[in-house]
Image 1: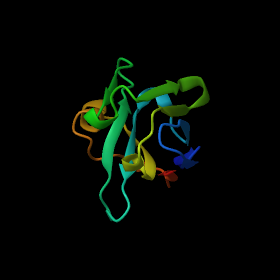
Image 2: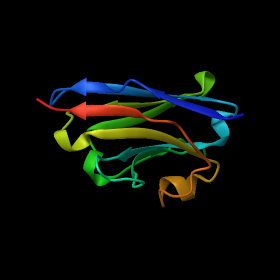
Image 3: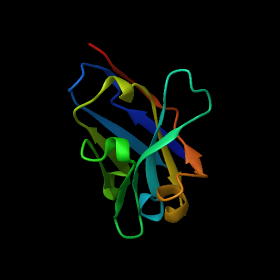
Image 4: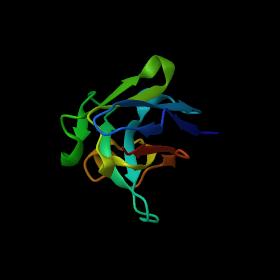
Length: 127
């Protein structure tokens, strides 16, 4: 059974940093692309792709709003993917979800059709 568990969220001031973790079990991380999505407050069932790590060549993909501020990385030996978030802004507030897909193109380029989702971790950026 596949399980994806996010952690590391919490309250943070604007300009601050957080590091999110995505622990995956029940599948081999080196066979899956992993992405982070955000669901903003009030946006039910709408999740925006932020960062994606391809399993095929190790490439990382980012949406424009987080480029230069967020960094995705993976440790296949620990079956864990991380999202380092720096210079956080109030508009970064939301639920952060980790997703896995065996098709790196579909997940990292189209930001669509994850095979698996985690339950999410909340990030609140406020002064």
